[in-house]
Image (tube, rainbow, N blue to C red; front, side, top):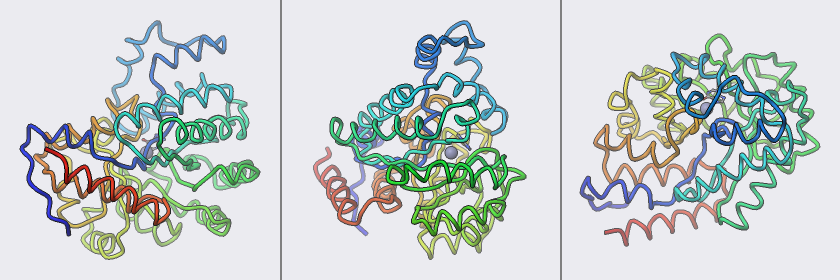
Length: 346
Ligand code: HPA
Ligand code: ZN
């Protein structure tokens, strides 16, 4: 492994901000800031159940994942047109580029929107157009992963997949999101097998609120290539060994885990242990508008809380590229940019 020069704690935030990175776990609907929520509500002639931005932000206190999902869902009601999806994604991509994200694999849940009478092609076309423009204007590569809602049935997931197939070329992969407890990955065995046969890259949320058994079944039944969250893997030594040996990535989201009370505070988070065990973990923002910050906020505050070092920073950035679904040649390019920043940083 490359030797990383130690960097004084006071300079770490600058390094963390400057280093190029990939974001692999971010729900685009969770990037909808209250200001844009009000703007879109007005544009679409809709009323919000809040008088102003400050009262929306005050409502963002959650006891668990389900409490968050209920509020998140209310926010998605303002998204009606292709332009709305474009504007939301464009705002995120600008923000991500400012954080030196060079590659983003973006989650969205089409079922949330089709339930509101918005068709899958409106959603995908708006998001995809923002991804194309982002590469041209901001120099950030971005791709889309459609997440099935696990609180709904597998039949409904099949319908969502079917509706997305005419837009297959605009999608990178399939994921699994929403309420984890009581909805184990194996509920979606057939639809993931179908998606796999169609050539989609596969990921699933598992082991945030749900037990390590959900991580096993995401790997063995759904055959996913990455685990979203996965922090509860640390409860199961055999699972930790497997994740390490097979280099299965975990897309960890520290602010999310604290806001949803998986850990009582950032200084109790296990990302340091996960990295020190040699697992291929990454840091991501999950739902940045709801959980208190974007990817660099997650990096800088987690590093400060846990006393992580420049070697951890390098490892996390390198992991983010290794764990991405970018082409090998593109990964090499990212890696070179990373090395250049670490070699020239002072
Ligand atoms: N967890 C699970 N499902 C989700 C989330 C999340 O943070 N955001 C949007 N869907
Ligand atoms: Zn998530």
